[in-house]
Image 1 (tube, helix red, strand yellow):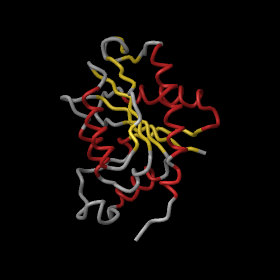
Image 2 (tube, rainbow, N blue to C red):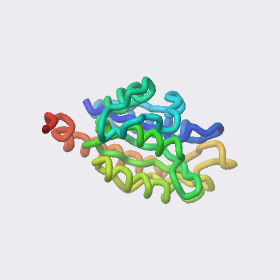
Image 3 (tube, rainbow, N blue to C red):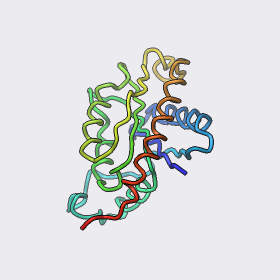
Length: 192
């Protein structure tokens, strides 16, 4: 079975990512049925410090207990949906930092994006797409772009417009298809 992690990219107090991730999880689970398993992965549960590994992930696996715990969780998935806000035209530092802790755990896997912000986090997702390419991830598009003006009541209570349901369904279908197609890359023996 395809396992998909829905990563909440913000750890900020008062964030909306938990509401959005729960919505994505429920829609994805209902839509995909038994084709895939979905789990929410909350960065706040990992309390990752600023990158504190002495050796880059490209050279050796992390040694810190928090890095190993994070790597084990992320490595267990076949694909990801990243739920991200946009802070100053960028993804949150917590998300970029969490991605930078790992390398091999991301490779050969598809990633899709659900962004929320004044303009749907389009610029933040654009930067994450560039990072995904370097990590050898298959970047699935288009993103689901949620507006703080139109999908949140009073900028706080998440009430998505109906059209976003179909967007999430398309995203899930494409993500599952890509995860299946890329399986040989994830299961191929390492070359010396």
